[in-house]
Length: 310
Ligand SMILES: C[S@@+](CC[C@H](N)C(=O)[O-])C[C@H]1O[C@@H](n2cnc3c(N)ncnc32)[C@H](O)[C@@H]1O
Image (tube, rainbow, N blue to C red; front, side):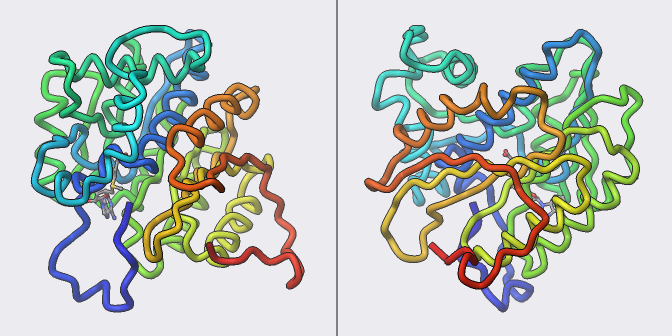
């Protein structure tokens, strides 16, 4: 989750550190949805390729100074520990099976019981990869990519590229002709939505049948709506937009995030519905917490219906 976007972002000396935000509500939402999308791809035997444009480090230490300072994970993955859902490995009839599967994966990374490690999206993808599936991971920051390489060393299914993820369309289509592309930028660039839309245009021209998932903050609703419409024009089917609103009331804090999914696997929205609502209840920070899902239309809303900022 990015800090407040500054008009002077390009002069900042410190780049975005995902480790400060790992395991927060937005991360959990994104990762559980990713888990669901890859689980859906696993319904067929044919291998898939997972391409990630902004991969991050792959695994995060929740005791690192940055994670301790923000404490964001406590209102994210930490909520599942508080409610006893996570580490005990119990299957409850009330908790959706997909969510239990995801949480058991996190619990397996924390064998001592106390939560200290949280997976990044590449680890979430690896947890579902079969022997013939492949992971292609792009990360621009060399030090972060170094951690990622170390994390996946020896796994022949994984390749790490130190490169601009927005150029990763050149790696498409994958040989498998089947797969998922995750675009999860830090949103520290003023033109990040435009960069994502340009990437989608180039990527879809080469791999029209791929599943694409884009994570974004819902802070500037007009910019987000413009991006969604642009993506809808590019897609052959109307994209799905999943949102999670924590209902938090604090000013300046990220409260709502979204995932735009192009070419979602058949039945995904219905299957994910109970999971989304469960997440909204567990991650709520206020009475207006909610999960929503809708199809994005290419139509421009009239002024009266235009979305307002949270
Ligand atoms: C939001 S984090 C990714 C988190 C990761 N997807 C996860 O869920 O675990 C964004 C990452 O993108 C990296 N990054 C920033 N600009 C990039 C670019 N143009 N291409 C590739 N990586 C970039 C940052 O260094 C950061 O590690």
